[in-house]
Amino acid sequence: MLLYILVGLAFCLGAGAVLGSFFGVTKLPGLLLQRKLEARLEEVAMGPDVEPVADGQAKALLKVAQGGPMPAIDRFVGGTTRGSALGRWIEQSGVKTTISAVLLAGIGVAVALGFVVMLLVKAQWGFLLGAIIGFALPFMFLNMKRGKRVHAFEEGFPEALD
View (cartoon, helix red, strand yellow):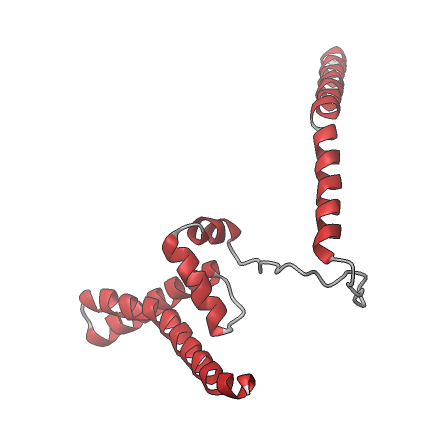
């Protein structure tokens, strides 16, 4: 029994050493080059006249995308025509959120309002009606915020030109 344990342990150590050396030879140089490239890109993005901030980082010239609760959805939906339009809509509204956060909020409000309407009307179609209205609410909120912000911009723009 002890012999089987020693053979299993030797196999695990040998396989680990082989896989570790394979990783070191094939993947490690690429990771080091990637790190060097990212450091250089960060240095170039900051520009020559960037003052350091209190936490040791510097203010960048490039806009940093805000991470949402589901970054994969942000990338997937943001790559589509409607998704990029929604992203511009969110940016124009001035709300600090992401596409995935708006979609998740829409789904959450849709389910909650669907159940409430279904309980109020005591019919199955109430869930569908409430879900449609609930999913539209976050988008209506964004549209309202965007409208107010665009209106304020349009009011102040002629004065800024003068």
